[in-house]
Length: 256
Image 1 (tube, helix red, strand yellow):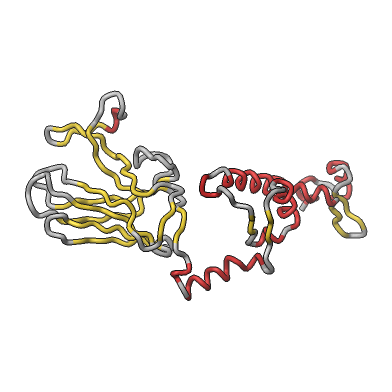
Image 2 (image 1 turned 45 degrees about the vertical axis):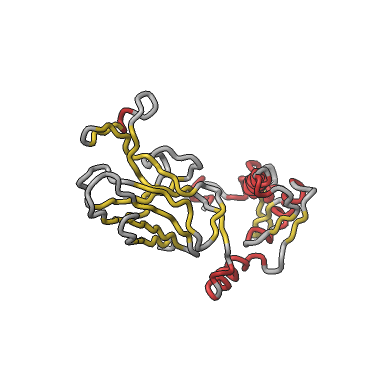
C-alpha cells in the first residue's frame, strides 16, 4: 500500500518515523512509545471527561472508578486513570469487555434491575407562548386570532442530567387550546442536547413523535395535563383531559 501511494519501498521511509517504525526480516516493528502515542487522545479525553463528572454534585464523595468495556482492559487507559486520579480506587473486573453484553442479558431477564437512570438529553413539547417584543426573535412571531404568539417554544418536561425513576411520571404540566373552537390538541415531542433549550428549532433538537388529544367542549379554558414516564428502553407520554378524565398515550421506543 505504501509503495502504491508513494512510489517507493516502505523500508526507505524509516527516516520519516525517526526509526520508530521499521521493517526487520519481513516484519513491521513499531517502537513501544510510538505505539502508545496512538492512544494518547483517547486516554486524555477520557480523563478529562471523568474529571468533569467528578465536579457534578451527584458525584460528590465518590471514591471508586469501575472500568468496564473493551478499552478498560488496556493497560494504557488504566495507567492514565490511575495517574489522573491518584486519590480514587480503580477496579477492573475480570472479562470487563463483556460487561455490556452481560448487563443487557440480565436486564432482559429482569427489567426492574434498573430502578433509575440519568437523562442524556432534555425532553419537552413544542408550544406557543405570548410574544414579548425584544425578548423573542421576530421570526418566531405569529398572529393567532387577535393574539400575538411566539411559536416553536420548547416547554421542557425533563432536564438533561436529571435522575429519572423508571415507571414514575415526570413533571405533569397543563396545556390549553389556542382557539375556542379547537377540537383537539396536538403535542409534538422533542429532545434537545441542551439543559435549557429555548426553541424546538435549535441546533440538535430532534422531533421524536406526536400525540393528539380530543377536547370536544368549546372554550379556551379546557386543560389537558401531560406527563412523561420513562421505562426501560421507551418513553410513554400520557395526556389527560381534565374535564372528561379521558386519557391518551403514545409510546416512543428508543431502540427503533
